[in-house]
Amino acid sequence: MQRLRGLAEQLGVVYQQISDTYSTYQRQRELFCRSGCGECCLHPGIEASVLEMLPLAIRLYDEGTAEQTLEALQQHEKPGCFFYQRFSEDGKQGQCGVYQQRPAICRLFGAAGYTGREGQVELSVCKVIKADHPQALKDSLIALESDPPPMIRNGKEQVRQIDYELGGRNLPINDAMVQALEKVLFEGYYASMAEPEPVIPLDDPLDYARPA
Ligand code: SF4
Picture 1 (cartoon, rainbow, N blue to C red):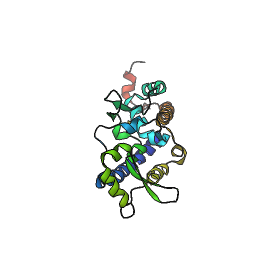
Picture 2: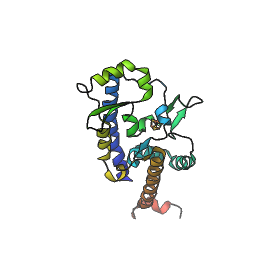
Picture 3: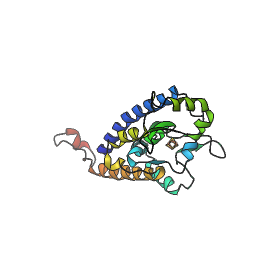
Picture 4: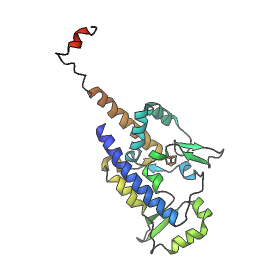
């Protein structure tokens, strides 16, 4: 369990750097997300690694809700992320229920760079932002060379480097969360079994007064 907690701590540092870098680009280019929009959280194709979900899994474990969340996740059938809180009938309005511990992919999405087929830098922008800010998009595309976007693969690599085994494979986000919770519950169980019994000193005079 200590190892998982250590990984989660490292992830916390990297997540902060990633959030700063990617949101700064979005803000400077005026490619703002629409307020209250949750379309990306509803997308059936969101993927994350088990590693990315660890900080959230550990938080739920510490709060004592890991097992019940695991059960609910295993029964979850709605499209999109389990942690998305819907505020509108069609689900397009809503918010992240776990914003502080959201995985890396949720910090990279919005407006960021990727490598095109010819090796050139391309700009990936969500369709809602494209519709809301056509001029900012045009300016950002013109400025691709002079003001390149942070690359999605760099953010992902920063995370993967923390642990290649847990971070090397992407899964649908809810499946990645199931595996992260199973891992944390498994290691938490063995850590609690391995905890040493409290030692009562033999010469403790109070020991004689304790009931048998
Ligand atoms: S973790 Fe939060 S931001 Fe990421 S997909 Fe789920 S609801 Fe959306």
